[in-house]
Length: 242
Image (cartoon, rainbow, N blue to C red; front, top):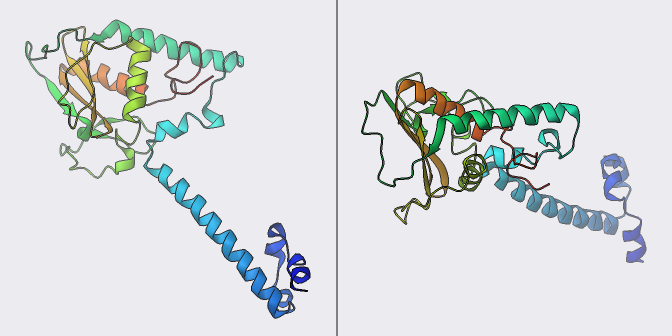
């Protein structure tokens, strides 16, 4: 008898149509069975919510490149081809201005440091805007930039290293501290300025020492690395599979 009552319960898609009067018209056993079904469904949805909430801590680009609206498919439309041409042109431009520092002990101390900055000095107006130097002159987390607008929230350490490799080839090995830093890359500007990228306790980090002009070039490269125009040689966003 109870099995027949349970089988007559509303199905999940029709639960939204279950008014109070209809619920009250159910027999006590049916009401209890319905509540039991609802509790199971709520618990299932809560577990799904927990999984999705974990993605809020995933750097934005790492999830964004997988969205259908931001994908470039190999052999896609003419509009996609135009986007690829622009991306590859920018990559060629960066290769003309930047190259790996081959000497592990090479630094930018051989010329006047007009400017220097670190990840904490970068400011974004939104989660999608380009990063620029903090204009409040506070820097070092002194400005009101939310964490989700900063550099480490834009791209993961692993995707950053991968994209640097896509543009400049495999970087020369460098000795890290083996503790908070597990990899580090130094790019030398044609004027001798140095742009550094590294992993810092699992997150992406960057720093610059050099001329004002090279600083501007460094910010352009940095924003390209955290943007959607950086491409694999096969024609899709760098970081996804064809």
